[in-house]
Amino acid sequence: MNPLNHVAIIMDGNGRWGLKHKKSRNAGHKAGLNSVEKIIRASIKNNIKYLTLFAFSTENWKRPKKEINYLFNLLEIFLKNKINDLHKKNIKLKIIGIKNFSSKLNKLLIFSENKTKTNKKLQINLALNYGSKSELMNAFKQLQKTKKNLNEKNFIKYLQTRNIPDPDILIRTGNTHRLSNFLLWQIAYAEIFFVKKLWPDFNEKDYNKIIKKFKSIKRNFGNV
Ligand code: IPE
Ligand code: IPE
Ligand code: MG
Image (tube, rainbow, N blue to C red):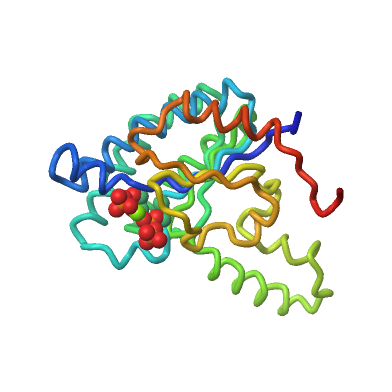
């Protein structure tokens, strides 16, 4: 059975869910939060140590301003309401991506990270304003400045995922088969699961099915 440390998820399909059920994309984003909570609980039950959630990409700024504002407002309310609860559950929150939001939201994100930084049960990496290509370019540039040897070991120290093992599983919901600029380096050997269901419909049972399948896969890492 494969050990499972890290699950990364592209939580896609909120907009379509919202349009289908409530005639509003934003209603889908709200509904998606319930799935986030379910999957956090299920990750703890499965003793997973790292859960990386793609919540907003560097490309998502192309969306209508109204939708962007709604999303960040939702995040703010979620954190304000839930950070104590996450902390009590011994969960560590880390933001990957560039924190260039309103100063109010930036402060709340930093506060949440600091409050939970010594927690040990589960680390949630929330990818916010995250883009893999810009992460990689930035890491190359930083390493170049140090004049250290250009090798993998030195390079990964400049990624935003430094100190985090690579994902074992990548899940994308929403019936779309692409990576959308997510963790391109880190998923080199992840087992990839594309799920038809939209994110707000994704539940613990779907998650456990993937975990069970993952455990039985023969992972070669180039070997035979
Ligand atoms: C993913 O759901 C959540 C974010 C990108 C914030 P979408 O909003 O992309 O949902 P669809 O793909 O349009 O249905
Ligand atoms: C990827 O979903 C980003 C997140 C889930 C946050 P998108 O819905 O933005 O991806 P594309 O634009 O369809 O590739
Ligand atoms: Mg989408």
